[in-house]
Length: 97
Image 1 (cartoon, helix red, strand yellow):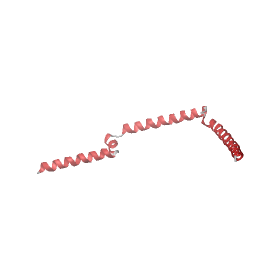
Image 2: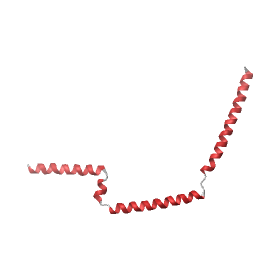
Image 3: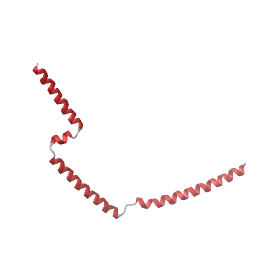
Image 4: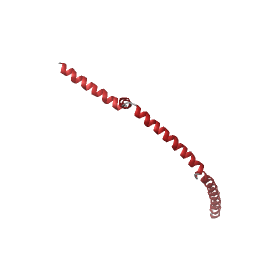
């Protein structure tokens, strides 16, 4: 029985060594993909340039819009306006009596 356990241990060690080697090979081959190159920097600059253009365009579009249109695009503002109008109507209705 003792010899059987020694054989099982040796087989387990060999299998563990093989898995460790496979993991090491896969890990090492994956590493160069994570390293940045100079080409990536050019892509980042291009993306930043386009983002700045879109940001300027959005700012210009907001400057051209009137405040009421902007505020009405948010649901809570419309609800607050409707509530205010309803309170005003109730006050005016009571004043008519």
